[in-house]
Image 1 (cartoon, helix red, strand yellow):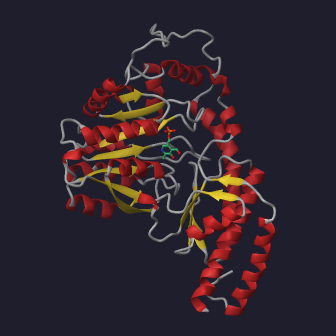
Image 2: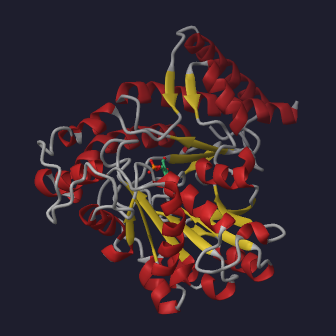
Length: 425
Ligand SMILES: Cc1ncc(COP(=O)(O)O)c(C=O)c1O
């Protein structure tokens, strides 16, 4: 169905046909949800052995009683897990509580209130700003918005953010203090940054002000759906470029074990870790070491990270295939949208024709299919083209996802047709 080359009569005919189909679906009063990237119950079950794994043995190999206070930077066995996920040395890892987002929030607040590694706190600048590759992760943007840090959109390409623009902006404005990066299976595009992009990011510390930090949120570092996709090591690249202080890396087991009850990690240079620890000391006596020990035992006694992630992939793969098949069948021979084919992560990013995303989301909601609000993948909730929609296939059972996707493609077709008709009538 090519709406650009169709006659007005054809468009009217198609619109009538699809409208009738849509009205029929609305009468079914469905309630389907493909909004957030949550693991399904089947995935969560893979980690149920966490429960009871300690068998009343709460001590680590070095004799630490995990039930008691202390250990600000986490257990060494948990830090080893973080080091494996992020491919960094264990002495550069802090194992924290249940959420990497909390660690990111903490890191931004540290930069804002106190500054990193002896640099000026960002709040003392006239207008501190973050670069935000778009579409991106809404919760990153919420942190900046809450603190009044201005956000500048940078388009994402197939290799990662538009690095020409990133370098240009940093060269022009010394008050750009950070950039958000989801370098592997990016949320929502699924893009993995190329080696060249990682190399150029590692050089930013030479152009930017000393307080500038890359927030390297490697949330999907081990979430491959098939063959392992490799991501260049940013730490090694910064070491080669003399910019090791410019990066803070984050990961968690949220989408590995139990979401919301996992262990989160931050890794950085000693100078950055010292800045983080200085603030953490006032904030907490220490993380939940019992949960850290449970995770460490789980990934040594019960399974390996790689084996465990293969099981996740086996559950997730058919769901991604379902989404991609619907999109392929509906739009591969049409001019109504484009999408990415991710090899891992949690999302499929779909771009409608300009000006259609909000209408598609509304129309799907009216038919009982909840989608992430249009605009959510952009700072301030404003997609300048009103075209990006994030599809999260992981949570619903396959049959529900299948139904939700057939309604989604129907809504995209109807909105596109109606928009075209409105311009020619
Ligand atoms: C890119 C990204 N970072 C962080 C998170 C949240 O991680 P956590 O549960 O460790 O806070 C998510 C969850 O969707 C995510 O997509």
